[in-house]
Length: 247
Image (cartoon, rainbow, N blue to C red; front, side):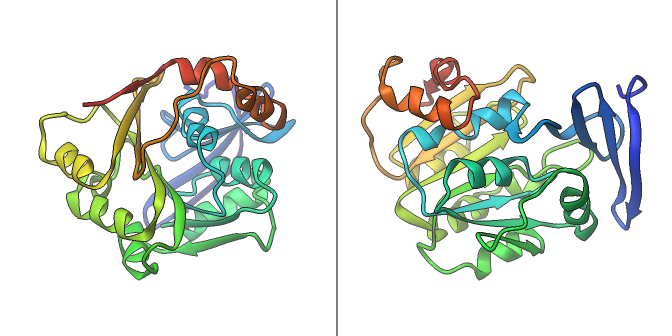
C-alpha cells in the first residue's frame, strides 16, 4: 500500500514494527505496511483524515465534555482533535506500547500539554483502575497490526466503561464490523445505555455510539454544526447524515 510513499521512521518493539510513511501531504502510522493505524494532514495535524476518526468526534454535537478518555492512542489523532476542539477539556489516553507514544510525539505533533495525560498500559487494566463516574466520554479504538483487539468485544469491557462514565456519558467504539443486534454484546450495550447509534464508514468499520441519556436530535441546519465546522472542519453535517439508530 505504501510503495509510493517514503518511510521516514521504522522502529520495533516486542509487539512488532512501527512505521511512519509520508505520501504527498499525508503522514501515516502503520504496524505492517498494509493497514493505516493513523493518518494526518501534515499541514493540520489536529484534523482527522480517516472518515471513521472524524465520525468518532460526532458526540461533540450533543455534549461538551470536561474529560475525555481515549483507549488506543495510535498516532494521537483523536487526542489532537479533542485538544484542539475543546480548550478546557482534559484528555487521558491509554496506549499499550511506549514506542507508539514516542512515535506520536516525534512524528504526529501530539500536543505537549498539561491537559493531555498518557498512560502506558493494557486498556483493560487501565479501565479497572479508573474511578467511578470520572470521565464524560470514552473513545475506544483498540487495534493491533491487522485486527480489532478482542478486549473491545467483551461484555466486561462494556461494564467497565459504563462504571467509569458519568451519568450523561458517551461510549464511542470503532468496531471492525456491525455488531449483531441480537448478540450478547449488543444486549449488554442496551442494558447500560439509553441510546445506541451507528455509523458505517467507507472502510466498512462501524462506529457505535452509546449514550447514557436520551438527547434532542439535531437538524442538518442547526447552528451547532456550523459552529463546530468553524472550529474543526471535518464536514459535520455530512457525517451526521450517515448516523442511524441501532436496535
